[in-house]
Image (tube, rainbow, N blue to C red; front, side, top):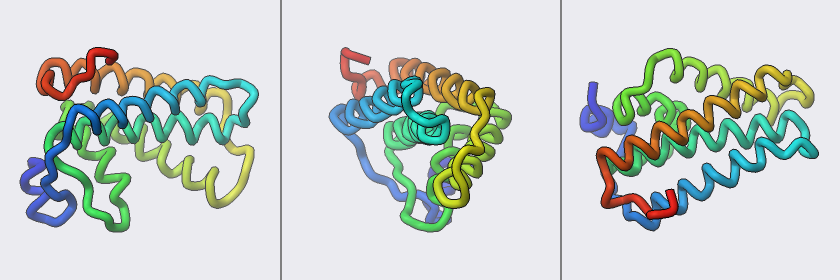
Length: 150
């Protein structure tokens, strides 16, 4: 499978990006990772911030590849799944992100207080590792999109 094939299926649309957009998205990743580590905030909100940082990092790779998800049900999952085609992420990471997505949805829409310390730590670690992987991938594959501060 390829990003081009995903576009044929209507899951993605081709759209060029810019260094400014990539810098802005990396700024969101940085902000959300910072927020996820603020202990004065509930575990639920910190988990949501960590998940958002990881999902946005996945979006950075997708945008750098010249695509964006089509607005449809499940477009956030397509962003996560695209990691296999952009940064060649392991299936295990993508599965963790799917689990995090379900947990984030439950935390946002169903009930409060269901995020354990372990889940929070794992989400923060995954988001931080993914941020580092995406930045390294950008430097190797799309240096023209990199801002010197990242």
